[in-house]
Length: 250
Figure 1 (cartoon, rainbow, N blue to C red):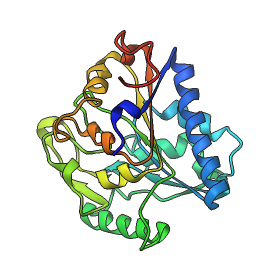
Figure 2: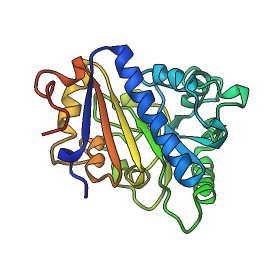
Figure 3: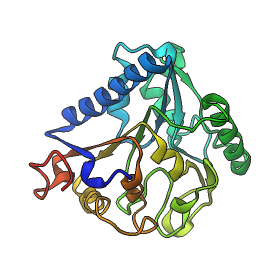
Figure 4: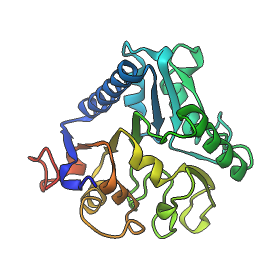
């Protein structure tokens, strides 16, 4: 098991550097995957944090005809909604022109249990029924409550290990609408994971995620058992003074 102490941490000096670091890391993973296997399969997280990096990535000269885009999670909304993870990422990556890769979205506007089963079938078909679903790159964000993807604390969702994709019921008390999400076994199987962390509000979570403890309390701790390379990209506010001079979690 890869320990958090072995995971790389990059501290960006400003938003521009944070954007460039994330985009360049994903671009490198795409290039290496295409060179090695002829295709790059990337799972994207939504939200505002990665938007700049996705726009940057769309402008890089990559073999987009050999790139497949998937989604880490999705809200129960149609693709043209401003809250659609697919919709936002598709605009940032300019996927509508058909020249920036093939997109396999989670259809949040349909019955979520049916979509979860269909997306799992899709993953098995694209990766091979007898093969592990190992994405070449996964982008992850983090909530101030410690959630990542749509694996929320105190729900037991991070412990699901018999499905690749699940329907996450709405949590009105938390203001969370129903969602779809990849499960922890998919995330830990990835060849490369980049975690985007910005803002002082995320500092506590970034620190908690690197120490032993309950994954149900801090789902981001699942990365302590990741099989591939994990790189955290923090801004100055998220890093704080405790690890500002460190390139690795200590």
